[in-house]
Amino acid sequence: MRHLTGSSVRVVIGIVGYYGFVRGYPLGPELMQRLCALPWGDGVELREMNWGPVAIVQDFQARADKPERVVLVGALDRGLPHGAVSRRRWSGGALDPQAVQRRMFEAVTGVISLDNLLVIGAQFGIWPARTYTVELQWPESGLGDLVLGEIAVDHARGQVVGERPLTAHNARIVQRIVDAVRTLALDEEPPGVQSLGVEQLTPVAAVAHHRFVDDIAMQCPKPTR
Image (cartoon, rainbow, N blue to C red; front, side, top):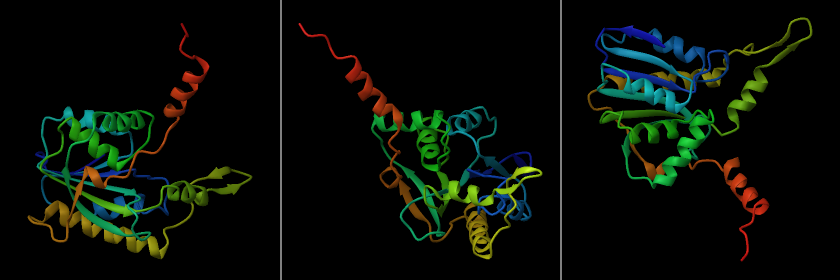
């Protein structure tokens, strides 16, 4: 977590899924360095949100100062061209309780997800009216593939993570993210912002607990009379 300036925080910028050890990843250290270098002025706080949504929500609940604006940055798959950067304003909406519970279940398993954070945060009422997202279009397997590509095998030292530098293509993506974050954090009426409601969220992935319930049902059939 990095407190940039000011004692009274008005804007919180959270990098959801930030990886400081993966240099080639657009949500890696280059992004954080460029954001920290900007002249934000007073009242802006920049946070690394690379842990579970439930812990982030609890941290917001414990704050004495409630931000007037939140900008969340994350990578996910919205079906856009690879590397696209979009700006959205969270409009919320009603979700079935079971849908919220599925996202809670995924969150406590350690999955870092921008969509889950939005839903769980809304459930506990932590988001201000001005909650924005900066979204990097990145396929679901993209981060895992990239991390594997970052691992350089050195038989003398073992495996070294983070050796691959940022590519020119990803550097351009980083700058687009930085520009979008600055606009959403500081402009009174940011232009070109799409609405983001619950109906647009990426569905929760099918996880093992569904199969577990089926297996239990097969192994423990109901007694017959």
